[in-house]
Amino acid sequence: MSTDTLTTALTPPPLPVLHRLRNLLIRALLRALRLFSPSIDRLLTRLSASPGLPVPAPTEAYWQIPRAPVAEWGCGDEVGGYADVVVLGSGITGTAVARTLLDWGREQKEKGLSVVMLEAREACSGATGRNGGHITPVLYEQYPDLKDAFGPETAVQIMRFRLAHISALLEAAREEGLLEDTGCRRVDAFDVYRSQELFKESKRKLEVYQRELPVEGEAYKVREGEEVIKELQLNENTAGCISTRAGAVHPYRLVTGILARLLREYPSTFRLFTRTPCTAVSVAARDGVELYEVTTPRGTIRTPHVVHATNGWVSHLLPGMRGKIVPARGTMTAQTVKNEQWAGERSFVFFPGTGTHTFDYLTQQPVGGGGRYPAPEGEMMLGGAYAKGNWMEEMGNADDAGWDGKAGTYLSGALDEHFADTKSVVKQLWSGVLGLSVDGQPWVGRVPAAVAGRRAPRRLESGAACAEVRGGLAGPGEWMAAGYSGEGMVHGWLSGKALACMVLGLEKGPASEKRRPDGARGAGADLAGWFPSVYRVSESRWARAGIEDLVARFLC
Image (cartoon, rainbow, N blue to C red; front, side, top):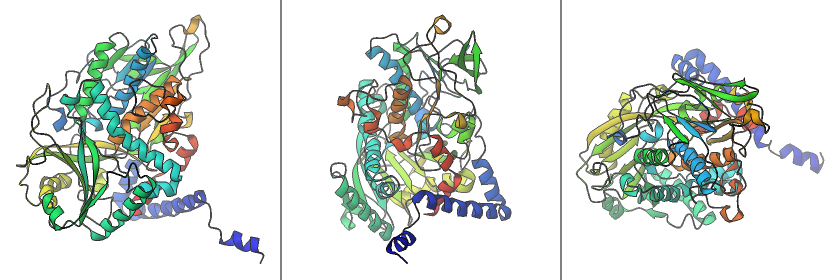
């Protein structure tokens, strides 16, 4: 055997081949399991089905008390006419898109874009208004795997993109005059480990992260030993912690506060319709001009651009995303404790088991403040319980009118497991719907026709027939930003801004803004400099991604 032949024989197959082989094996396993397990059969059926429209009466989240003035804005108004862009969803992503589009026109001193936002329920009633209030990016734990999957340059870009959300959201709250209302702030963040082996593995990952990203890793500290555990008031069985700086915010007040400002400053070009679900998107020609027709129970809007910012519900109107982004119901609580020692200054992620797939997350509200709203009372915002509840029934579940009873029971007593002495009382318990990306990365960008299930309107030529249609934007199309896998607060804001840049046709901006994703209100930054290309929607990525990828992530 020649040297070349031997080398070829010993060379491992390329990663795409291994990926396909792995997925074929998992697919065969799932088919066999479906024959013997009705619960697995029901689960896989849900994961490939439409999530439907959001239920009209979801559980009430702590964040939504009291309701914002814009909560039911436009809910009784007739819908119709034309808009340059229609945004579906009023959470952090949809709001970032609308804010960037509207403020860009003013900064450019041009005629403003007309933007319509449709929300199936009250404003900010989806995942953004139901999460834990964390701005805590997952960094060192995922860096080695991302580096293996995409290479070191892309892995570093993803780390910086996530991390940039802390300063970007603080800056947005400051620009909007919402710092006091939202309590947007920096906090000390602690990853708390119960297993010595997992703690040891996490310290090894942290060493790699700090060595390869020394600036981003500078704030991290390993905290262990009896005195540290006692100082942090943690359970005596805690193996140790890894700490850094992160952020926290009242997400509902941030988003509804920005929407209120947009409605106030752009009364003729921004329209918000709550309790107005989009029931269909189609392409139709009138007077020789093809546009999308966005249908609602109260009328139809014509537009060249439709932005899908509905996360866990995105596949309802984009059938090709079924089995690519799947809904999952999570449980959250607000609890009161008699502890004001570090109120509002710390957040935690607890890993009670031997793997990082099982975790609880906690941040504490400040005591006092609140701006124009009732002052918070140091409530503990605790969620998670993914391995403690009926997880198989929660996957593929988009019904946030109830919650998993087992998860709720666990969370009601979990603070006493994580801390030495809390004596907590549950103040509010609710659920929310996450959008899980099967390949682990968000989906952001133009939606291919194969994914949407319909072609885009033909690009318009200049002339009297299309006088109402704004020129200078990207070609007509549908766009999406979704699939944050429970990490929307460190993906959604800048993904929305990046998507707005794409719609505006401003993917290449001034070199001075090349690495400033946390910059000014407007668009114009060169996306290649700060937006991870692996997040982009493409037909090839869509064809590769499958439920098998999600299963593999949980098995590994």
